[in-house]
Image 1 (cartoon, rainbow, N blue to C red):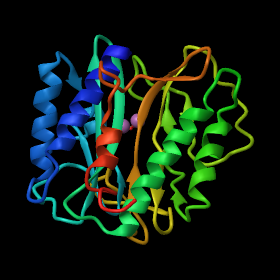
Image 2 (image 1 turned 90 degrees about the vertical axis):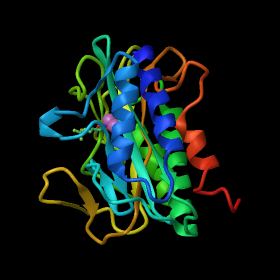
Image 3 (image 1 turned 180 degrees about the vertical axis):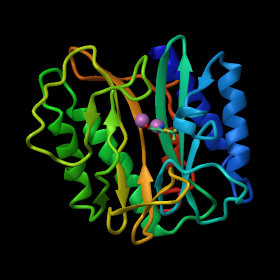
Image 4 (image 1 turned 90 degrees about the horizontal axis):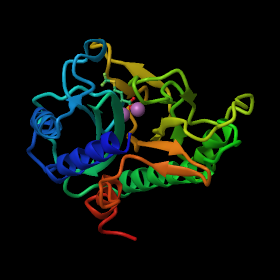
Length: 256
Ligand code: MF3
Ligand code: CO
Ligand code: CO
């Protein structure tokens, strides 16, 4: 799981460095595909329930599961790149936001808030803690930040299966008292919105957009519960990941 996580994190960092006005999400898909194979891994999305590409690219009002296409990214766009790799029998799943050129203040606020929500959720993880603590931590950031929390898509168990049985809601469901236990591997991947978190699905069967077309952001890590808390698995061998790149680059580079 550490090796699969590191490979996913490395590929996501490389993909993120290519984000710039004019590049198409198809070109990002080609980069991800090649970099995944380079590492002796398989791009998990490709052919998964008939998903046609090797990565998900979700632009602006797209919440998740955007399919790479021929539209060039434009200055002001925000894009989530979601990389999953299958290496030596297990999956590593991670995503981050990238700003394209100059991004408006509200988008930067959204992106930063979503990353803070993921970080708060990871902080809440420990053996014996109920699954509901994760959504509670996310809402603790989203509510005061006036950001919507998408309910239709959840974090998930990950390992030999891309999507295991364990579900990790990003909203607070106090009835979910399932305790986290050492050795569990799962993702946390909150999707937060500037407006309503209501979801609509395109007729391609994949692309999920906000019903009000407000912008949405998402960050994702794969982690394992250890004795002290969470160990993040989707970091490169030097401990770095695209999330730092994401905040250091366009979203937020210009204001504090
Ligand atoms: N990577 C996504 C997740 O975080 C799942 C994408 S499924 C796909 O769970 F088929 F669209 F790739
Ligand atoms: Co996932
Ligand atoms: Co993912």
